[in-house]
Length: 341
Image 1 (cartoon, one colour):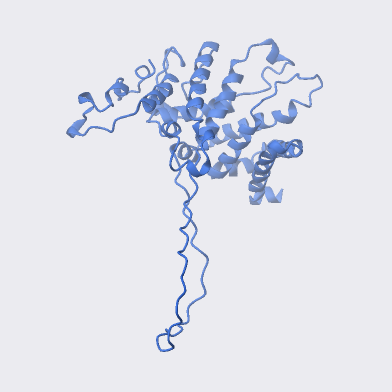
Image 2: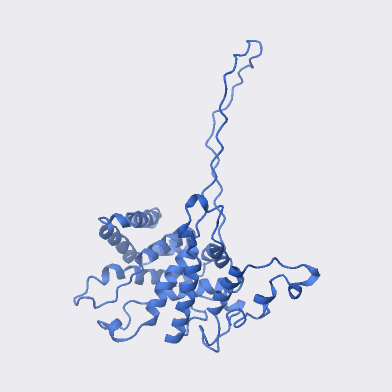
């Protein structure tokens, strides 16, 4: 079902079966596309299952190229229900399981054994890559922990959006943090054996040379498709949506512990994922950083980062997250407007 249903307009619905290199896969000009592995076909089927009408999206919704290019709220995951959220959560957990092989590979072995399932997910064909990216960050940053504003509302009313948001934050973090292999080390110079001193007549004359300059900077690593989609977020309404979402989610870390009634506000358990997402958004999307610095939501974001530093400083297992929070603060303070404030 995942490889046939929900195929976008202008694309053959049976391409999951035909691109295996058989006679039916021959395109115009007699050129046959490279064969796909079983894992690649399984990965593509899981991605397509996230956009199947009647299963993970509403029956009247259809995925098209134009819909994937619209604003922050124009995605097929906007209409939701408990049944649809359950299907989306299962599909995202499957993708997480497929993309987690890099956790068991040492860094020096990433070049020899890359995570092919993660590469297939990051480089998913269009319009599924745009639709998946748009759906993930829309689900994450549209969640309001306050909800109805009633104490213990999360215990009285079932909230399927909470679980979907948590899994979507993990999957979005994985897709935007694709591990790269370390740069190859320079080969060591061969050991020089004993040599005889040259004669005076054979010595070259000293030629004055200019002082050596700084070494050339290494070119930045190429961005993958998901990172390019993040960089391409330029619309003001989309950036304001992201800034407001970060404010609501990050401030929950201390707001859920400062209520008059104990545990009256739902506490998010994905603060570390949100912190890493904030770092990726700040470092890759310059317009987002500029808008956040000029927005009134900056005070809540800075307060949340300071709370993370103070609350995690005594936990050795979270020292890396303390460093990441400090890096976010340094990046924000490097802006002229923020430094003036």
